Length: 236
Image (cartoon, rainbow, N blue to C red):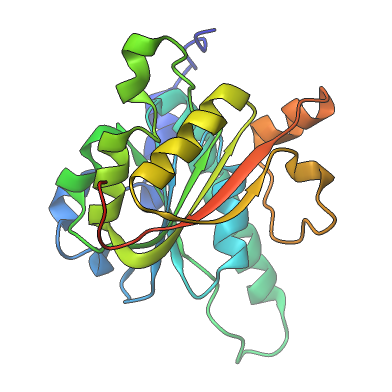
């Protein structure tokens, strides 16, 4: 179902411009300028309203996170969460008595755009990790190339990720999951972990929930999960 247009979305996005990558092409080959440092950069494609990206940035304070969302009215929520979280932590830090506290973490940016163009925006080897959560399954056979785990996308990921980087994939769509595992194998990616019922795992300390994940899990739908290593060669 199409999301209803949000009122004043452009103004709300503009109010969070410090956390928005407005024109990613400007940073091709110099991604360090986005954050002002050389820390590793993690990428989430299809960040939705931003819960996962926020959790990823918090858990990886020594890395930077770029969260990509195609729909502006959805990305708006991710931007507002990023801004509110930063301002909350900044106010808390300023209230501390010891003035020698470390700088407040500022390692999350949101990019509004289509993942098809990632290799136009980012130079080879830009990213150190990739996360794809509950993407559109595009179930019709004629649309398979649009799936974010299709061969064309895997080839692009191999290009923009450093060799040996980790890709994590979550979905509630069993057929997409099985098909994606086949594509990972065909691309020569090393499959490190597979679960067809993630929330049935004994140890979930590594997991960061998304908005969709909480909804699907509450409905009793099993969550499928795969972790693979991006190799430097292969068919992809």
